[in-house]
Image 1 (cartoon, rainbow, N blue to C red):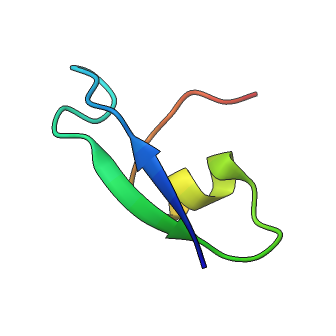
Image 2: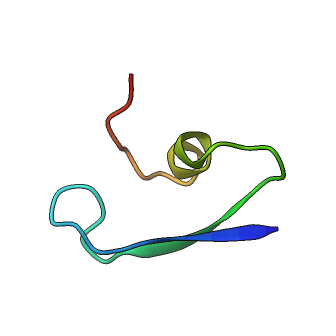
Image 3: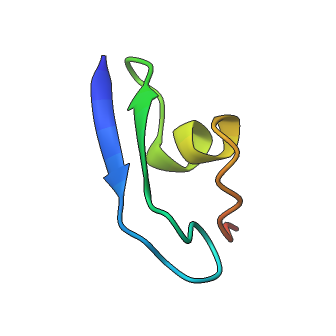
Length: 41
C-alpha cells in the first residue's frame, strides 16, 4: 500500500501523521478514513 505523510499543522493534525492509502483511493478519502478532518469540497 501507499503511505501518505501529513506534516504537523496546528489545527488539522498537530502531531502529523503517516497513513496508508488503498490502491485507487484519493488522498482526501484516505485522510478522512483515518480521522484527519480536512476541509474538502
